[in-house]
Image (cartoon, rainbow, N blue to C red; front, top):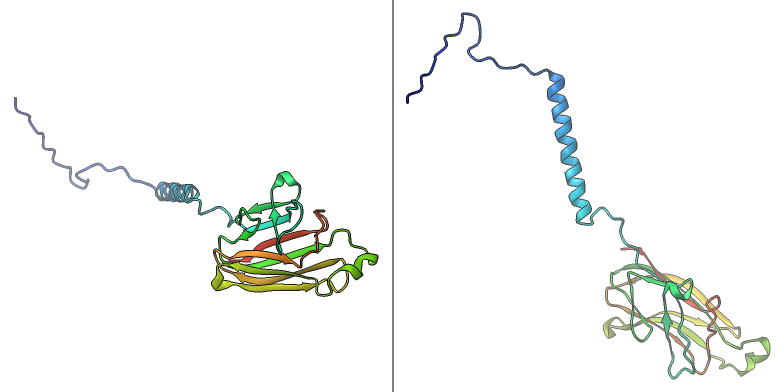
Length: 197
């Protein structure tokens, strides 16, 4: 079977093909819809990749893990919402109760240690050089003291500072033996907060 094509000869003064004319408003409306669709798709993909989430703030507020008589200078810490006001977010608390940095940056450290069974009458029994130190104890290449505090004959040592820490640094807190820190979370605590990556 053969198909027959009809050839139409356009009339004088008319175009050969009837083309619908689009108004400028239709063109602008279509462009706006396509642009919004593209922006929404881009945002959706970014959210799926987690790039629009606010940056995570590495921070910890720890309380003393007091499990009896101290055998060495190190204080061991614990952090969990189940314990009350303590938590660890973005940092790592190792099995020995020491805090490890996962992301390098400038951190604010704060610590307060109150001595247990301390009063004005027991001051004479304390070693005259009782100190509290906070430092980087691991890795050995970064080992350095960050804070060294004296009790100055009192019962409380407290301080804070800003310091750069590298990924993998482990923070240790040491208290002169045989002194015992108070296990009260209002009196003895240690905290770290990333302030600038």
